[in-house]
Length: 507
Length: 58
Image 1 (cartoon, rainbow over the protein chains, first blue to last red):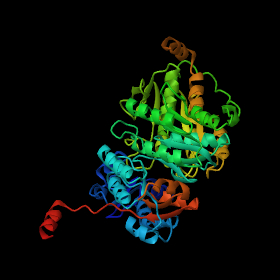
Image 2: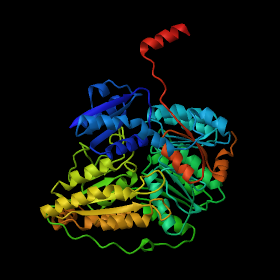
Image 3: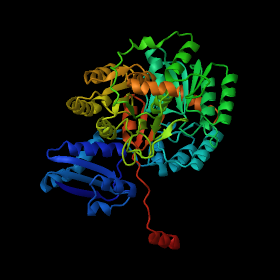
Image 4: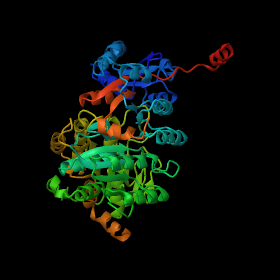
C-alpha cells in the first residue's frame, strides 16, 4: 500500500465538491481510499488520523487543496492524482452555469434584482459576507455554523433595524414562496407558515403536513441559537410578524427546542396576540405538542383538516423481542432535532440515554467515538463534521459507525433517520444499504439478531422519492416507522424483558 | 430598504446569490429559481512580515 499526496496551493474547493472528488478517486481501479480537504490544521490532524498525511501535505496551508490517495502501488496512486484536475472540472459542469462570478457585488451587477444571499462559507468568514449583504439591503440565510454569538447578535440587530430577514447562522432549512433553500423538501404550497429554529424539525413537520394533504406557505429558519437569551429570538419575532402579515398564511407553527424561559414567555405572548392560530412546539416542553407529528396534526386541525397518523399508512410490524444480553439501542442520526426527539421518547419510556447532544435529563457521552448503554448520536455536530459535509450529504461517518455499533454484542437495535429533499444526498437509503447488509451479515454469522428501525423525512415529490427509499430500506431488512417518535417507541418495544423491568422501576 | 422588504420577498420569492457550496445553487436551478453562484474563496492571509511591510508602505 502506498500513500501519495498532491497539494494545490491557493485552490479553494467547497466541502461537497471535496467529498465528490474523493468519491471519484475511490472509484478508480486500484485506489483503496482517497481524501480531499483544505489544508487547515484541523483537517491535517484528520488526515493524520486516517493515515493520509505525507511530508508534502503536512506542509500545506489553510488555503491549499490537499488530495491524498492510498493505492496498491505507487503508479496507481500517481495516475489517480494526475486526474485530479479532470475530476474537479467534471464538477464544474454541474454547477450554476455561465453567470458564475467571484463576489456578491459582481453578482448584483449581473442581476440587480437579487433579494437574498445564501451563505455557506466556512464559519469564520460567514459573518463578514452576511454583513456585506445586509448593508446592501439583502435578506440573508447563513447556513454556516461556527459564527460567534457576538457576530450573530450584531447581524440580527442590523437586519432588524433594516427590516430584513437574517436566517441563521446555523440555519439549515428555509422555504420561501415555494422555493427550498439549503435542506428543504418538495412540499405542496398551502396555508401553514413555519418559523423554525430547528432545520430537520421544519423538514419533518412540513413533509408530514404534505403527506396529510396540507400545504406550506413559507418556512422561515432562525438558526439554532435564535431563541437563546442573548439573541432574544430576533429572527423568530421577525418571522412571526412576516407570516402574520402574509395573506397566504392562515396558521403558524413555531418550532424549536425549549427556548430560554423568558424568551419562551415573550413568544407565547406574541403567539397569543396573533390574529392567526399559532402552534408553539418547544420540543420537550410540557406545554404544547410533545412531538413533531403532534405539531403537524395541531396545525392541520387549526385550518379545519382532520388528520391522523394512520393517514401515513398502517402501523409497522414490530421487530421481535431481543435476548437478554442484547439490551441496548444505538441511534445514529443525521438530523439534530430528530436525535433530540428520539432521546425525549427514550427518556419518557424510562431509559437512561447517553448522547453527544443530550436533552435535559439525558447523560452526556464523554467520548463521542465510544457509545455507552443506550446512546443517541447527532452526527451533524461541529465536532463530527470537521472537514467533511453534513451527514445528510456524506454518509461515510454513519456507515462506519453503523458497523462499529453492530460489532458491539450488547447492541440489539440501531435507530436511523433518512432525510430526503433539496440539498440531501442523491440516494440516502442506497448509500446506507451496503453497510446495513454488512452489519446484518456479521450478526447472522454470530447468530445474534440485530434490528434496524428507520423513519424517513420526505415526500413523494422529493427527487429521491419517499416510496422508493422506503422500498430500498425494507428490502434490506429495515423496519420503517411512519415517524421518528414511532421508530424510537418501536425500538424500546423490542428490548429484552430484563431492560423493560428495569424501566418499570425507573418509571 | 423599506418595511415591506420581507413581504416583498415572500410575495416574489427569492432571487439568490449563493455564496459557498455550489450544490445549493444547483438545487435552486433545479427548482427554476433565479440564482447566481458566487465562487467564494477565502481572503488571502498575509504573513505577519508582509503585513507589516504593506502597512508601512500604505
